[in-house]
Length: 319
Image (cartoon, helix red, strand yellow):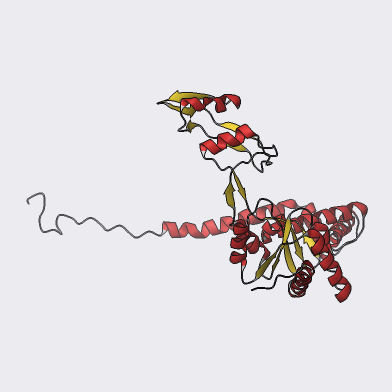
């Protein structure tokens, strides 16, 4: 017979387990577990087995364990987790890729009926078509202002109807109608709300960013820094190349307007004196190439002379 542990013993064992996870892992996903059943949670644990561990528990107990762990070890990198423990949440410790773990967790969603009092996570739309219900059930549709007609002895919905809006509470009539139609509009699973990695906390949307997105955002940031630096004449690494180019333009402009000269300025001055030299250069080159190709076209194989009648051995006129 197994010995039943006391609450104090359970708390000590839980604290020991959490501290060992904090020692071993540096990446944590914070997951909201509203409306997630025990069987569903077991399936998620089984799917993540190998490089990830799902830990559920009371928020106050987890906070106390993290606080005691920080005091004992001097490691305060996990302190940001305490502010994220709000509501019915759990921790997923992992050594794998954060995006792949989140995608694996998202696979384990289970359809659920619309129970009375639940807050709708999505819009619920009843599609048009035959419901299979007998005409005596039309009262449900009339209460909810759903247009129907009787077709072959059954109730048929004429047009799609938005029955419940996202964020609204499910009423008794809506719940009963969806149950009669066999519609399970909601799906529930662990929902990742925050991501922790090496002391930093960020939104799970960051995991969707690709390398191209990061490069684009970085380039946009560098461009903004360069623009601001140029506007206030403050040198930065992003603005220095532009400052050198603008400075060179100023030096070139001074050289063009004065007698001061240097090799690059001489070319510009020569162009300004006689732009036609540079404009004609390209067409002349094209003309030369065209002239060279002309003789080739004229060189054609000589056409063979027509054979005379005499060479063929007879003449059109007799002597």
